[in-house]
Amino acid sequence: MQKKRTILYVESDDHGGNIRGLMSPDTRLPDDNLILELANDEDLSFTEAELMVISDPKEFDYCYHSPKLRSFQLYLNKLRNRNLEWLVDLSAGDEILYLHLGDITQGQKYVSDWVTTRIGDQFLIALANHRPIMELPNLKAARYVEGTSSHVFGDGTSGGVVTAQLKAEYPEIDVKPIHHGLIEYNGLLIDCAHHGPGPGSRKWLEGNIASYYIRDRMMKDLLRGRNPADLFLRAHFHTWARAFWNISIDDKDYISEICLMPSMCGLNCYGRQVTKSVEQITNGALAFEIYGDKILDVHRWTKTLDLRNYEVIA
Image 1 (spheres, rainbow, N blue to C red):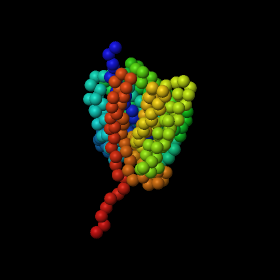
Image 2 (tube, helix red, strand yellow):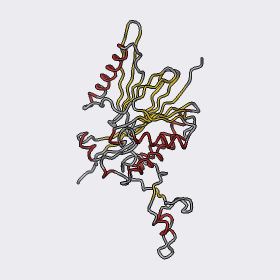
Image 3 (cartoon, rainbow, N blue to C red):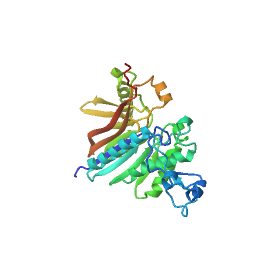
Image 4 (tube, one colour):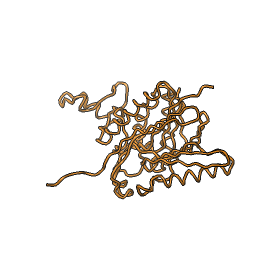
C-alpha cells in the first residue's frame, strides 16, 4: 500500500475579541441603525469611507462595519497570511488536517481588553478568523479543542457556537468541537488538549516539565496495555516548547513527542504580571509533515518579538 502524505496544521489561543488578539480585516460587526440615515444625509455629506458602510441597507436591518485593526492585530494578520501561504505551498495538493488548541475567543475576563462590549461580537470575530481555514484547498477535517472556561464562556461555548456556524457555511468540511482529543490518523496517534505542562521557569529548565508530563502519560498507557500517543499537543501558556521521551520495553522502543503551542495573541498587563515581566513573545503556528504513520518533519512558522522599549538617552 502506498504511503499517504498529509499536513497537520496547528494553531491556538487567538483570543478573538481581544484588542491584542487575532482579528481578520474581513470582520463585520453590526452597527447602530442611525448610520443608515447618516449615509443619506446630504447636509453633513458623510462619505462611505467615513461611515465604513459595507452592506446594502435594502438587504440588512443593520449596517455593518469593519473595526479598525490595532498595530499588534495588523502584525498577527500579516503573520497568519504568510503562514497560510506557506501551508498551501507545503501541502502541494495533499490533504490538510487542521487543529485548533483552544481559546478561540477572549471570553468574559478582562473587559478592558475587549474589542467591543457585545459578547456576540467575539463569535463574529472568531468566525471571520476561521473562514480562511475552511477555504484552504484539500482541507479534510478541522477540530476545535475547548479552551480555558473563562475564555470560552464556560463549558466550551465558543467552540460549539463557532463550529456550528462554520459547519453550516461549509457543509462539505468535517468540523467538530472536542474537549480532549485522541485522534488516530493513518496509524499516527495524536493526543490534543488545551491545558498541560508549562514550558519551564528558567531557560535551562525549558522542556523539563513537558518531558516528565509525557513520560507519565506514556507509562500510564503502557501499564494499561495501550500504545501511548506519538504526538502530544498542548497550549494555554502562549509559549513554544518541545520535548521527547523514549521508553524501551524488551526489543521495542516507544517514542513520544510533545509540543507546546505559541499563541496568536499579544500580552496584556495581567500577562506581564504572571510571567514576571517576560521580555519576549512568540506567535505563530506549527505544520507537521506526516508520511504514512510517521512525522517526517515539523515546520515551526513563528515570529519572536522583544517586548522591551529600547532607547538611548544621551
